[in-house]
Image (cartoon, rainbow, N blue to C red; front, side, top):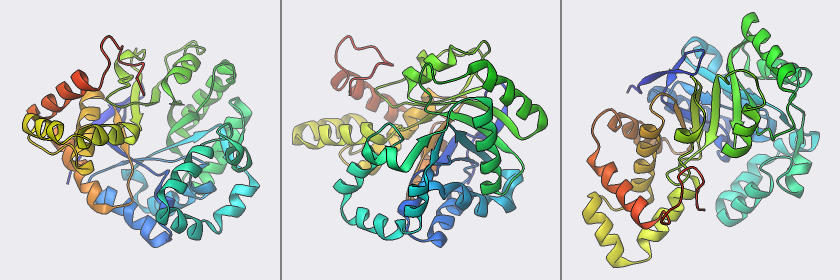
Length: 342
């Protein structure tokens, strides 16, 4: 299989339009399974892999590096700095296999834990598991050196500030370091990753164009078209997330509505897999020159995602019909795209 390539951002990093997010691979309890899902994404044509020091309670970078080091010249690795796992998190990482298996049996518990441990400011669990390391040159240098060791590489393609908030970034200091790291070859490009409003506010504190912005987006938010450009490349994440559940619930709760959507789209939008493919297609069409991240632990869903990316290459009347229904029935009248309504 092949996924179309894009030249990402001001540094023109050549990568696949579809990227694989590694935040959830530790839902698979065994290393062999985790390495297999990475290989399945690669074999399907995905070349962009997104990770962070905090993912997998500190183990995801090592896992990706173990798999990627023999393919280093043919993959693009994006990692982050600003949030690190604590010693408590690293201790828990050794026993996370049984914990993850429990979460798979109890999805509601998994979602509750996920929400309360999304980062150092997300709740009691988050403050125990993760620490804010800072967004200055010294923090960026320390984090990059650790990431290079974990990833078993001498450079990363993309280094991102991870969830900064306005006022937390020493802009000129960190910009000077990142530019020097790019010149030295330790990174190829850099950017900012996070929720759109704080990430864009932080971007405005820099004097120069940010090479890459990695933003949360979906069919309700539609942030990419409203984010400042000037050559900035966009990576989007969370394009399924809440949007998938919201649309499937809306379509499924009324039989007549489901039939009407089915007739208009030519596909049953009450089926999660069907709607997920449409949402990916919408995200790829919205972010035509950037990267759309997705994540899964099921190999067959990788094939579906790649198929969605391939459909994007031509006219898509099915997607057009789907988006007309989303806009007319799920977006409140007068709402501005980019603000969302969730």
